[in-house]
Length: 433
Length: 107
Image (cartoon, rainbow over all chains, first blue to last red; front, side, top):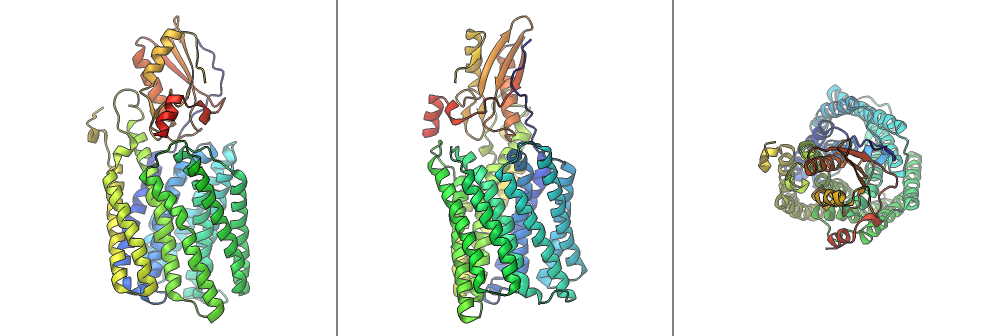
């Protein structure tokens, strides 16, 4: 017998059953978001505080962005912390709470009926975040490995919790005034804690690990990531207090800090790209990298919005809408479109073929989806975003309709590819084992 | 990195067969990727033992890769039991990729 010498490690990954519902739900939400976009283009020519815009934003932020991040996190957190997920049951419970809570919340915004149903939806979303956070913290506590990526994810989840609690408070404030100002006043605070606190921190924390991994790059720079982490968190805390103090001009300080952190992340991704070992970069990585280079664009819009607000005292509503659109349909959607097809095919491939590995011919994970459909989805998406953004800025109905049609087409192709992957069976590959 | 073995002839056969086991993400086989550290044969117990690593601990595809290695060794040496040990000491790094592997990735 051979005496084992090295450390024996088990590489147990999270069950696909936990992850797939999040991906399926997110795909349907993306389609719902683009359908609402198409039938509500007129709303984008007016003020941003309108029922359809609130409904679209929450569909994209919660149903699309948050659900897919939560799903991917349950798979990726074990990779980041080099430990197992604490509980599958908590993950299911988190999914069910969010899945049940989001529709009444979104329909409440759409009909502008912010009654008990919408409030119950909001509370369920908060519970879902709490369950996810419990699972995340318990997983990290059990793992012996701590790293900067996991720190990003924990901090991001804390900000998500703060954002959703503020969201519920704003809902209550609509019904019975419980805050010093109207809910509209706090909208910007609620939105930015979610955008920078939840989405930006998560994308940077996870992206800084995955982008070099998928590019097979030697690059790693923990000091840069630490700087980014501190800059964003200090910016968010100062934004919170400066906002409540009512001083608009000073908000440029946290905005500048966020902008610097974004530039540092762009630099990090660029270095990872330059130092990659694999020369060929696939389309999924190209669109993910493109999303990284897209982040400064909405930041420029935000600086213009704040500048105009300081000079004229009035917000440029079309610029605010364009800014929000570029965040949710631009940056966030681009990275999700790319990363879905870098993660989902592997999860399904692993479920279907891992026991057959080494016993015969198996497909590559990339064979589980259509590259052609992915290509046309990317083309349609890349056409839709600038056309729609121009439509919002110029309040041109034709551009808005054309842009939203392109985005709807991209969503249909995305959902077709996602469900093609999810419904894959060995029979599709002529393997009946 | 040189692979440790107590049977040069059989380990050459084993490594040739393991060239059919791929890391699905990277598209490179486990031998050129430098994941195989040791292959030993116990003729008395009829065992083939493989010590290997993964590019990252808790790699989502880890189980597929280790199952692939185990199944391939069992298929290549009928009558032998394949036993596998996963180690992260030393941890994998880019220097472990073979020349052929580097050429493949540079294409």
